[in-house]
Amino acid sequence: MALLKLRKLLHRFPELSGREENTARTIVSFLESRRPDELVSGIGGHGVAAVYNGSENGANVLIRCELDALPIHESSTMQYCSETEGVSHKCGHDGHMTIVSGLAERFYSRRPDRGSVILLFQPAEETGQGARRVLDDDKFNRLSPDFVLALHNLPGFELGRVITKKGVFASASIGLSIKLKGKTSHAGEPEKGNSPAPAVAQLIQVLSSVPQFHTALHESAKITIIHAGVGEIAFGTSPGEGVVMATLRAYSQDVIDRLIEKAAKIAAHVADLFGLEMTIDTVEPFPATINDPEIVDLIERSARSIGNSFLRQEFPFPWSEDFGHFTGSYRGALFGIGAGINHPALHHPDYDFPDELIEPGISFFETLIHQIQDTDNV
Image (cartoon, rainbow, N blue to C red; front, top):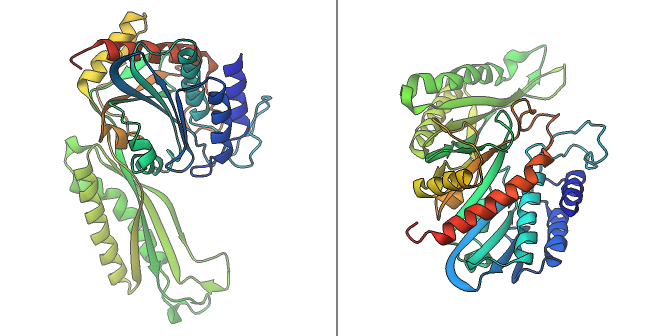
């Protein structure tokens, strides 16, 4: 009951990336009553970590969840609907926090047998900034994890089913922002200015085709135009500024770097062709999330031991997760847990975390932690 109450409270008061002050305060309040051996706040922003120590030497196992919500309006009749205008938990981070808080309840009642368990509530996952800031924070480094683990609920898969993959689990991605500057003029005399509109139109078309002509078939790259615009809504003015924004996505950083280089050359060429000034910036970088094969074996073994079915993915997921910063620094893995075959998709206006996953998620993490602590050669 306490966990369901917590989940609905978190859902009612979501906060955007980097602004999770009240969410962190709610988590700290919950954790304080579950008496961790150490409670650390302000990690990488509003991050929180609770540490539970075992009585014997062993590995330090970190379980990570996310504090932040999305800039998506929630229109719903449910009693715990978001009360923050234009912000809602449409990725299930409220549910992930509840599962990890449930682990705090378990370890309050009975400490781990060996080593320690570090429960990390990370800020700013949605922007790709939080994990890096946490890793760069001395308060986190003093916790010294040996292994890092995280789950993400996945609509489209059977409820409670565990989804794994060795190697690359989720794609690398980065945002590209191309700004063009010409010269405004009267809309009746566009020839006296220099509108970036033709250049913006050309960039939309050409950038979208870059993966087709500049990556191999097996490299599975994408460039998705996510925003474009010129000028202001002023019918008497021919615009003087324009912007094109795109997300670049691939399974490896090498391919991402090649896409950035090619896109930059194309943007410079188009700007020169139309006599425009051009600036280009990269934003929200997400590394690929690369899973340790032996940790994935333990995840699958844990699933079998408690009767959970699991599915090993053949290909990486096309979305990105900043947990890749953690798996780039420590041994670990990100895995999925099915949210239901017909459940609304992540980031969909009708999405809500299925509460039926809370107890299975807690039990699975608890089993997995024991597997890691009991395996000497991992």
